Length: 512
Ligand SMILES: [Zn+2]
Image (cartoon, rainbow, N blue to C red; front, side, top):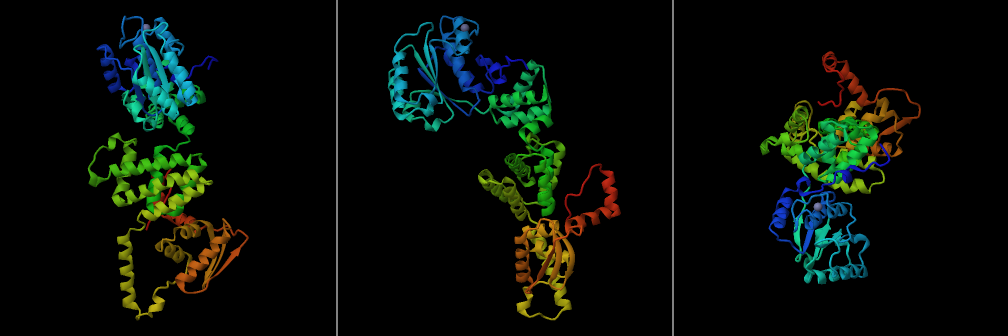
């Protein structure tokens, strides 16, 4: 890059109505008005940042003052003295005022007093007031006075991102235009064109990511592209953009959601660790998970919306989502959404985002039926039938307690009781050395003192007996329960065959 590098957003700023991006309605209305000589004394442009409010204001100022015509024209030439000075922000009769730094009434009075004098070089004196909602009440009042009786040669163009903060008295004096968020497809087309002009390669996947991250703003998208070019030296591909956005690719997100919904807490938390270790931004990840939930809902078969192809997922990913949808209810999706929405401010406020996210995953898994309620009911009734056949009626007091004789029974009981934290802790951190009569001897990989207390308490409450937990400090290097489950599965010849068949396959969850 040379020293005189101009940022893309400035270099490719629209210079006329024809090249204004994604604002067709505004362009049509405004050009028709100019061509038929219906010129208002005040305009207000509103819309999110980077949609072209200031660009439109400058184009309008050129349209009013272009020397190529003897009156206002909807196609300013762009080369005359006036057009060039306005484009550079240097025209003596076209004032650009940033309301954020001119909020006071004195400032505004000074500006408005000058409005009484005729323009020096132009047809109209144009005042472009950016972020107009920042003006103080008295400054607004001063502005209102001028708007009520505007000198014939003065045009006001107000711009704001927050139209609600502009007094109604001002709004009622202005012609209002709402600049729309620019659609993803339009942004993509524009970015592809810019890439061509800049002679850089921009892959379609990378472009899609940029366009979506821009969230309707041309300027934001181009700044991202600027950054990506600087980081890659001009070969912008998906990986580079993902890396820059600290974003996890959609395939990983789809697979992650699959694990979360499979009900295997330790697998899901492990997968999250992996994604986090790869540098993912957790706020972005939550965003992506919400996007997934939104689309899984739209794609839910009973809704018959059939607009899946406009989703951001590939055909393969859509197929995976379809399969997941067969195992969950619409209700589950909607409750997941609620939990995630609630997690957004929580995550922002948290001083330890990873901790917050771990808990979010556990909460989500709580929602995802694991196993589903009907299944649980079936299991219980089969078990109680068995009991009724083989054992005599038991004393009522005892019946609420359960019997736990092995580590496997312990994790199953924890899972059935939905004690997800204890469940995942036991299965992924404990190396069990001995499991005897109300006594467990183990090594704890995380060495969490609170945990043994919680487990003792839970065991007491659920078995009706006092348990002794003996924690050794020396690592016996044994498998944890979840590791054991995994290696048992891989040892199965059928699974081994399947793993060989799919290169790079890994076991992410085990369901009964
Ligand atoms: Zn001109």
